[in-house]
Image (cartoon, rainbow, N blue to C red; front, side, top):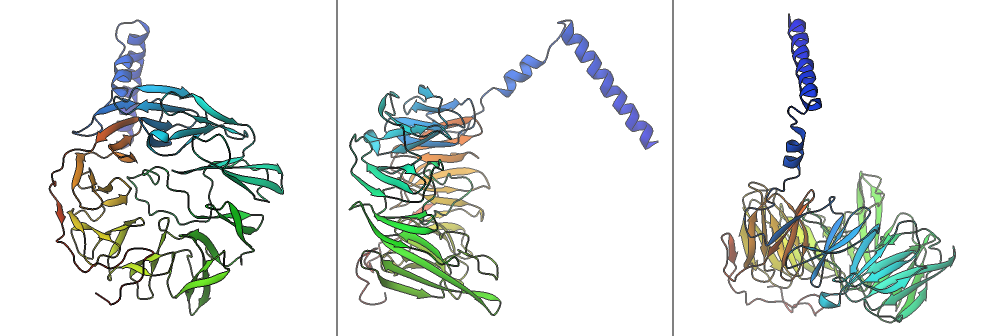
Length: 465
């Protein structure tokens, strides 16, 4: 009987399809244009505070503020849109794009995959400011643009430019890169940000060029001092170790297996003086997984800090320059985001996200959110909290916890700038401007703390407070 009913339903479906085909073919009734129009109708990306919303031709690969423009990178094209209205300013058939510089001095660097060279464009007009025909990789920062070009597989040069400059600032040899085309911002030996699902990892835009950059070249590591424009160290790393250049130091993570677990030693050296400046035993930077202790991941952190776990299971933020513990969590505390000045934390059992400034004992502010899945991120212009029950996007002033804007939305935060943020969902993007000066519901500033210790890279406090 069940088989008979199933065959009957299938027959009705076939009959309905035949009737629909007949009606469409005779122009009696055609539902498809209406369906297509419904599919292409933009739905509001947030419940309020959206200055503008635009539908893109495809889902964006990345979105970045560049002065008065918003640069959108697609899979096979690059476009810029005006901040004031979201109207398209220009579009280029390019495979990749990255932003260098800051504010009105920003530029857009574009290129094509598997093709040498790049173009430097004005963000608003799309005008070509400079063209290169030989570079195989580009790195973009707020204060510089780096490229590398190779005469042959063993003879390459790394060159630094001011974002809008036309003459190189310095050039150093970088052997062993070869002819592999890396496009924009290939991986270097540095700490990686703590990512959260609903905030893009590069939402804050380009960072300042680090004082040291570590390049893996031909099985070795070449360390370049970017301020002086010179090579300060070459070494061949042990295959079992992990190295990164963070905070002006070369940090080495040694891991050995024993008693069914991994034992770690973290050391930092000054490459110019070739001497060790600090050491931590039994701090796990989460570079290894499994009892074999093979290190496959870079540590998390910022430009001058790294994140680890102590032997008793507490999360910690270390100053990469001198090894000081800038923040030490309690058992069960969860570090959600970190930069060089602040840590966003969900304390064990708490129904809020708290912000700690390094060198300040108690929380600067807390934002109430009982959702344990709420993600968080820190950028220069705003701390972002993204609860999921219900879906919200909240931007807070990093120093005070003052709410800059709060919207009901399930969209992802794609870019954060000085005046607002771009959120996006599938092909839709919208600009959410930062608003007034009131402290919004949920953000409770902490009372003033007079027990200030010195901040990163300053002398340690004279006593434990």
